[in-house]
Length: 239
Image (cartoon, rainbow, N blue to C red; front, top):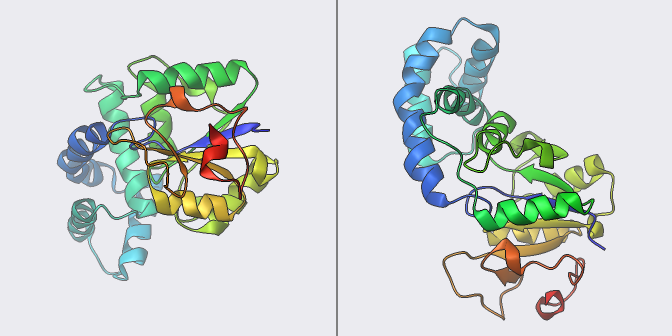
């Protein structure tokens, strides 16, 4: 029995285009000025030190850090310090109503239904927890944050690492087999399954492949939590 759902964001609950065509360009445009204005604030200064440490360049000045951050954005690097700084920049955009968080209507509908049924909901994304909460808090469907019981980012581990999902299961406090992980990335689903979780693969813009290694669906409407089998079950068992 599935008692908790952990969902990815990009390509799963929310469109890839919103992240890549709205959020990333906004961060790239506004990050330099944000860093210059807030570099001496303790929280930001600590993140800039994290950038220097990850880059292996402890002597980088503020402008050097900015150049490194912009290069990481262009590389789509999953650096925890970058994601945290992006979240702070996006907070300004959300609060100023420069944009609203995109969440697919089918995701909203089913997240609300599962929450009402007592299913515990969590987010696991490479974006910072702050960025996750902003997207769902300022979504086109209103404030969806009360639906969720917890939030995970790369501080728990890389999304393709089995240990990250074991850690998440331990924090949730349920057997991994009672947790469903949703994503649009096979490598993430492979890691979650190896940790013992049930998995569903969102393929919103493609035709589901019955021979895929994880059950594929085009929307949340096709997910039946009562029919899902835990780790080790065959693809067809989820229908």
